[in-house]
Image 1 (tube, rainbow, N blue to C red):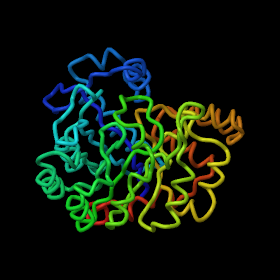
Image 2 (image 1 turned 120 degrees about the vertical axis):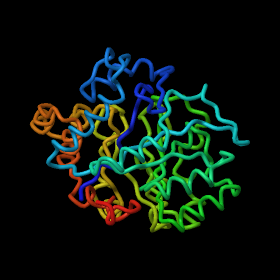
Image 3 (image 1 turned 90 degrees about the horizontal axis):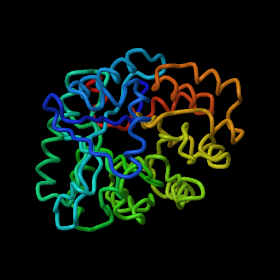
Image 4 (image 1 turned 90 degrees about the vertical axis):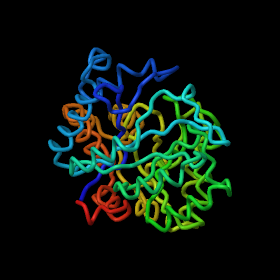
Length: 329
């Protein structure tokens, strides 16, 4: 099974989904581009059908793709203070766990990645609910949500994840679309304790940083691969306009042993484009142009990843890592 392991659920709460969307800073500037990336408009964003339309588009794209069979749909937790106090004023959007779990139960095209801040007072109870509900992974943005996974207070939570076989998909590297609580938590080294406890971890974006603006942690990611066999990375947002990907990093990602630990992810609704990979000499003009003619954004991103050199195993690897895939799909 070929899985896109990095697709965001987004909603405004219309239809009782429990989601909300209140873009701040660069997120506000980027909102029109994000909605356009999934074939919708800002008018749709402010309408009474947005949540239904958004999920309808995702289903359409998975069903219409020849390269993707299933999408891991990501919930989005609120930032929290270390004492467990939620900080909604520090977030641009929220997607509850039950929403993605319901969608995954209803549609075989989706798997559910829940999002739980381990400092929540009900974190363990929420984790158990999500495991019963069919969670395939737990997604977080440590630098955005204020999660230092190396905090020993989270040991019990992580031990339960390891016991249940629930992998941790964690954002690593730059974040320029949402407010950041702690820039130091962008390093993949924030996953050290989970890895030592035995949690399978996926470092989203493989620690890459926006060139000239943010630190790049790709070398740290590669070093950690040598020590932790339960560490993987994904290539989400690397075929886009994020300035994350550079030729030297791509060469290492495509070569063993790093290539054996990379999963495919798009980061939709972040737009994918071959423009920067072409400008960096990583993609031919012909391949860039052919990708631009693909209207389906999931298909376009997968096509670009193939042309960049990622092998079939990067598309199928998530099926061996995510919880419950073989038994439910």
